[in-house]
Amino acid sequence: MSGTKLSDRQQLWNALLQSGGLDSADPATLDRLASLAEQQEVLLPLADQFLAAPACTERVAERVALRRGNHARAVTQLQQVAEALRSAGVPFLVIKGFGYEQLQPAGYQRQMDDLDLVLPRVADGWRAVTALAEFGYRLLAATVARRDWGWSAVLVLQDDEGNDVELNCAGLIFHGHSVLPWDAELWDEQETVRGVGVPGRRWAAAILIAEMLDRPRLRLRDRLDARAVLARLDESDQAWLTDLARRYALGWELAAARDTGSDDVDHEGSRWLRIRRRAPGTFRAVTHAYPMMRPAGVGQAVRAAGIAFSRDLLGLWLEDRPAGGEVSDRALTWAGRAATVLNHRPAGRQLAAGISLPLVPLDVEVPAVADRLAADQPDDGIAVHDTGQALVLDTPVGAFLAVVVPIVSEDQVEQAVAAIAEPAPHT
Image (cartoon, rainbow, N blue to C red; front, side, top):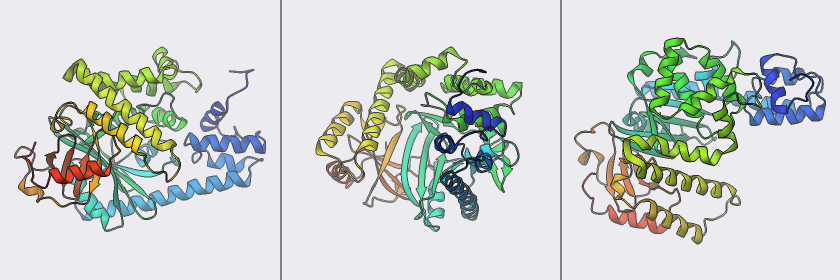
């Protein structure tokens, strides 16, 4: 790459691998590089270099101080959450943030904005929600999935100060329809960091490649994580990871993680990865449909891709609307029609068909969960009511409406409440 002007992204990557790479930057360039570093989530590991640069500006110093403050708060938050869950007897491991940080060189600080935990069962998730409520955490968002082995859920909690905790119960939900389930090896091979358990090297790598989904281009933090985690794997670990990627359709993500061996961040060595960047829409269609192809057939695969695309487009629309803007009647009508088309089968079969659904809290009480739990799933803590177009899930922390399209009108809520006034049999 000698004799050519380096991209800003490449300059940051070079600085991550060798100190002193920011010394020659002028103030305007350093400001620009700091903004990019924050976007690429590597401002924190580059903090010392930015502050030591002769052209360091007040703005750069402020951004570094903010990120260091966020990291310090995350350490305090980790201690608080760990104490609460231990007191409640809830088993957990910390993933991603501190889980990857400990695989990097000593002194490395990973830029992060929340805590990510894994729990063995969905029932552990309800207990964790209850335990953390005493510290001001409330359920912010939830998504559930059901497989032949039982339920999986991701529960996002937030306290009054905006601190988030994500609980991945029984597995990692991704693609909107697929789940990477936990197994005994995740718990048997755990390590200890900052006084809490984290996954061992195999499962750290598995979680890493699952987290790379839907990113046409890896962030610099992803590359750092991949280099550090995969460097710890021996030949048997690599074979295990390859087999896991095959079973859960994570082959492109594994290829991307292994491609980070190059120091040229502007060029993927794999031809398939270059196609992935140039045709992200095609990539998303393939990766949403393929995992459903073998177990459920082509029809279910196409349906899964259609649902995922609809949710993606709706999510983009919600992000682009003016802050505080109301959802229009037109948008609600469109969402309702889309849900009707996609839910052409009975709602009670949605989850079993492999679709993960977002949950909307319902301000309604239904009969006790214990009275309606299925005999073969006594520990999940979820009772299901089929309302026809959606599901109502009754859990130990409240009742929720589960819908394919994450926009719910007042009419939809009223219909769901009316449908569970006289509970239907468990589905």
